[in-house]
Length: 155
Image (cartoon, rainbow, N blue to C red; front, side):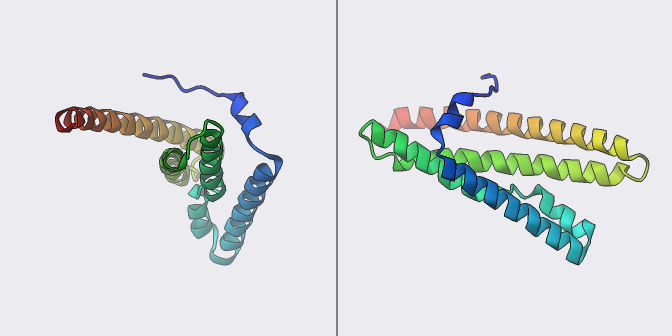
C-alpha cells in the first residue's frame, strides 16, 4: 500500500492568480454558507459546510496543470488532465463523506459537551474518511485486476 505523503514541490507548479482564484471562490462559498445559515438557520447552513469550497476551482486548475505538463513533453495531455481532475473529484467526495460524519457526530454530542462534540466529530471524520479511502482503493484494485486480465485476452 502506497503511503500518503505531502509534496511541497507541487506548490511551485501553481501561478499566483490560480491561488487567488481558489482563495476568492473559497471565500465566496464560505460567505454563501454564512448567508444561508443566517436566512434559514444553523441546521440548514450546517449542511453546506460539507461542500468542498474550492473544488470547482481546483478541478479546473488541476486539469490545466496536467495539460501544461504534458504539452511540455510534446503530448496533448487532454486525457491525463481529465483523469487527474476525476481523481481529485473522488477525493472531494470522500472528504464530503467525512465532513458529513463530523456533522452528525457533532450534532449528536454537542448537547452533552461542546469540547467532546469536537473530539467526537473529529474522530468520526477520521474514521469515515480513512475507511472510505481504503474501501475505494480496494474496489479500484479489484476492478483493475479484472480489467487488466480482460484487456490481455482481448488484445
